[in-house]
Every structure is written in structure tokens, then in C-alpha cells.
Length: 318
Image (cartoon, rainbow, N blue to C red; front, side):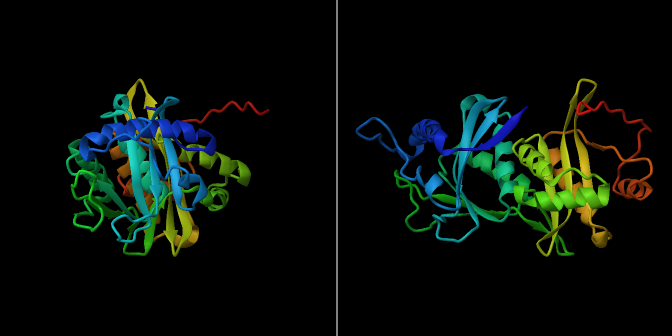
């Protein structure tokens, strides 16, 4: 399924406002909110997403069609400080129970690594089940549910329920892996050039990175050592009619000075975790015939060689 996450531009504010009405109407069955004199629910903080820092609005699209939205900010309604808060999250009925919501949530967690909280209405059982499953799978069950924060009751008097969790995973070696961000373009360019021999221009690398980050069928992650990217991996869905859905590793590189620290293994594990979440039957990759060291590494990580191939290409730029 072609799922795309795109920032909501100020020119699209009216479109987001319309979807918020549908979202608030559905939610009124739980919080009992009334419409205003114009027959609308409204959203008091809508303009803030273009006038204040650390507020982010995104549309969810499936095959180019609007499928929902989500809003992220750094306002901790619970009073407990975290890096990010999932303020609102909405998927249209047509796209529920199809993996769209989970893909969008995972994209958000990867795009904004750090500590998170989200508030939910405990009577909204579908939401409770959704977030328990999605957060549990993303964090390996490492999250907390808390209630009883003053001033966080819903309009119907029900106390708000909060989930607290982190989307950063750090290893014993001090290396941790997070989803790639547009700001990682220069370092990915350097790793491609120095480790893989791909001298693709920086600006084009930046453009391609941003494009890939907007598609849930692509997964890009970087490994950080003391806040410096020392490795990265790029995988995407490998979909064909002669095999089940697989994850295809398009590129993986580790700084030579950091090899032997488990960086490559963590990057492979991140891809495998993503592949499991996307229902993939396995992970595949292609490696140059002369990269014998890499071949030994892949075999050590449980990857078996299936066949030798020739790689053909027709270049349209010539």
C-alpha cells in the first residue's frame, strides 16, 4: 500500500480544518462536546501550527487520496515534560484496520526520536487497543500508562489517560539507532561516498532522502555514536507477483572507524523490526561480488546467499 506522509502547508489549513471537524464529531461520542453557534466544533489551536515553533501538522495519504492527519507538539498537557506529544491523530474509516494508522504512527515516532506522551479517552476502546498495540510493538513493551493528572479530565468528566514512552533505543556500546531525518543528508552523502563509492551529489542526495522519508514503504535509519552518524541503512518494500512481500536493503554503510562495535548489526536489526511491522516475509539484499568482508558479516547475521547474478542497467541520462 502506497502511504505518504506530507507536511500540511499554510495554504492547506482550510483542508485540515475540514478534517478536524470530522475528527471532533466522531470524538464527541466520548467527550460529549457540543457544537458552537455556527454548528461547528472548531479547533482553537489550529493557527498555532504555522505561527509557533515545535508544532507539526501532517496529512496521511494513500495512493494520493487523503486518509487522515496527525498533529505533534511539545505542550505536555499532563505536566510531565517530554520531547513530543501526539496532540491529535485521525484516520478515515475507509483506511482503518489496514495498517495505515500504524504506518503513520511509526513514521512519526521515527521522524521525531525522543520521549513521547499521548492522551487518550479510556472509553474510546478502539483507540485504547490501537495505541496499546502500536506503542507496545514499537517499544518492545517499554511504555507506561498513567492517569490522575490535575486539569486533564475530558468534558464529560472522565480522567484523561496518558501513555509515556521513548522512541530512542540505545545499546550497551553507546550506539543508538533512530529514523533518518532530512538533516542527516550530508552525513549519508559522506557515508555513501567514503564507504560505498557512490559519489552522488549532495543536493540530489538531500532531495532523494526527503522524498523517501515521506513514504512509509521506505525505511531509513542512522546509527549515532555521541550524536554523530556513524552508519545508515535504507530499505524498502520489495513487492512482486512471484514472492511474498519482502524488505529490500538498498544500502547500508558503517564508518570504518566504528566497525566492530555492533553498528551494522543494529542497523540490520532495525530493518528486520520494521519488516516485521510491515508484514514482510523476510529481508533481502544484494552485495557486490568483491565485498567478501561484507558477505561474511551478512552470513554471521543469519543471511544466506541464494545465487550469483549480473546487474544490468539502462541509463536514461545518456
